Length: 501
Ligand code: AMP
Image 1: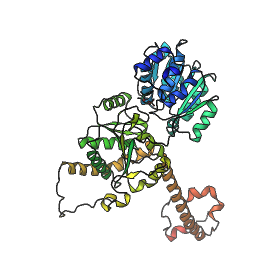
Image 2 (image 1 turned 45 degrees about the horizontal axis):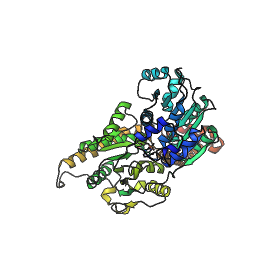
Image 3 (image 1 turned 135 degrees about the vertical axis):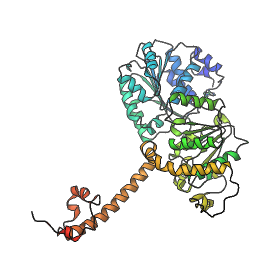
């Protein structure tokens, strides 16, 4: 099958041929003919499958008829992150080079003014992240009742990021006569529900299971002790060992605090690194990404949120500095390498506390991942435990070089960072599974404490001649027993004398 078999317009076909693409990918072959007929499409496909062109190309063909009106975009594409939105815009520019279309990109981190001007001019294509889109609408600068085609891209990522209520609101603002093209790498129940509510008799096109990882990627697990400095050391050693094959690498961390810490550490150790996380402003993120893409940076330290779906065609290595908490993120992360049939390598640093996450990943991908240099049972004491402090008279380690000094500085910083940054992790980026773990631990602790206190306060009541069991008075239980007040159980005898009133 060729692109000209799909029913695309001559202008689009010419741009595709200029891009050098000769054969449609399976998602393109499956989705484009239906999208051109105005049908709803449910595309189950990951990034890297050519899914962007599978909605951009038919949209361009359909947009050739009609004109945009001020503040009333004709089509709307929702993306979970700014980078993905910007990437879709690039696709429209590339494939729409023979069209005169107004494209408006509404993303956070940039001023409203420019975006207002684009809306005012009338947008044929509006590409937006949900939050910024709703902001514009609330400011009265945007009407959604002229939208003929709605694209919801990376729906499962939207779910992870908590955007589903926003998506529902937006869907309800757009006429039901619209065409909806919906893409997701996976179909968890919440996403299925969303498609049942907002898609009309969709054609389902599924190109590959989200759980599958490309066979062109060599995957390895790498054991490490669980202290940050140990993990950083493991990473540095790995990078050095891979040097000959390593063209460039993305290094994934679970949290943005780790992204910045690791980034600073790599710089200190003279690695040519950049960082990408959600707190950076848009210009800095794009700059960083372009530098990495153009080969000006060899290492990019990134969080999942910042890196999901990025189209960086030629990455030789992916390092998971942390084992991802959500098994599906593993598939997405390592999918950054081994693209378009190229060989790629992924190394996942695992500590003893990561075992359950590694198990979940292996269950998802349906395969065991080989260990690079011995499994976790071979982690030595010093790798798993805090290194003993050297006493005053203790012999100094041999080879006190720069590396050692940098390491010691970082270990010291780790101790401070732990104290300083824990609240930020809890507030902003604590992974859901971990939050659940903590909640469970807290609940268990609460139950034990209540039980102890119930026993303790029962004694107090008995001493006061009030033997009514606590459970008779559930409302007061917490108020009375939650905290030790005054002397607690060590109340001096004279204070126990009941005063007559
Ligand atoms: P996507 O899944 O949309 O992120 O696309 C992944 C990569 O595949 C991008 O670099 C596209 O430019 C490229 N691509 C899209 N369609 C084709 C095609 N038919 N043949 C070869 N490469 C393509």
